Image (cartoon, rainbow, N blue to C red; front, side, top):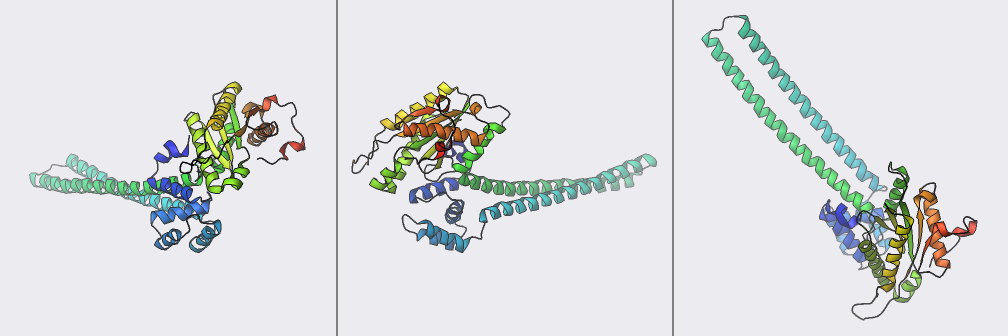
Length: 355
């Protein structure tokens, strides 16, 4: 269930280009930033495209905010949806008008057939009259067939226009739910997915949440710089993707934090998934390919909680976060199950700083 996989492949290449460009420039995945780069790469606004091209290799958020204020109205994202809604409504009304016209045309043709049948049955028909009737019906039939072809062509055109609107909405949907740096799902998508655990008719049995946090990530950024930190985040996300089934949901929920929603697995199996990822990250050499400088070792702390142990999505996240916290205070680079915690509750649980 990765956004860089099957879901993205169903949309145009433009969405992927936007994500790739933003990732290369280190741009934060804010909705307005997506809009800026989407419009720039689509070429729909040449002046905006030139503004984006003129940015530094690593633009600041202030630079992007200035572009946003200049070219976009406030709440532009909702405007995109509203414009699409208006376009779809207009297209549907035009389709309805075409169908109403076709119905009227067919009804008129039907009345003509009925009148002709009555005329043929009610009186003796001469050869000349019969010939005239045949000529009239031939013209009417040809006209009806031609009209039907025009209707089919018009409906086909409208269908293409609606597909275009749908495609653009799907592109924006992918962009809005994808983290540009790692191409994993983002926090917005995660919030929706964790809520679905308790909204689904399939129940919560054998569903679990895994929360993960890279250890001492601030030290990595301070020592080597944010570009190195970004590459480490990308490498960690690659390990997540390569270590799970395609139907699992993995997200970067913010900073150095990741989340994994598992279905169809017991607590023991969920622990195994988390610990396998932890070991792979611990064993992965994080090395600069040019200078051969080592940035590691990089480790990650994790917490897991079964959905059946929580009353809802917020409670599940809170309990899983408590398990993650226990991994941190117990020495990091480990996985803790919420079910094993002997001390549950207390205000002190959430008062900590991840590092």
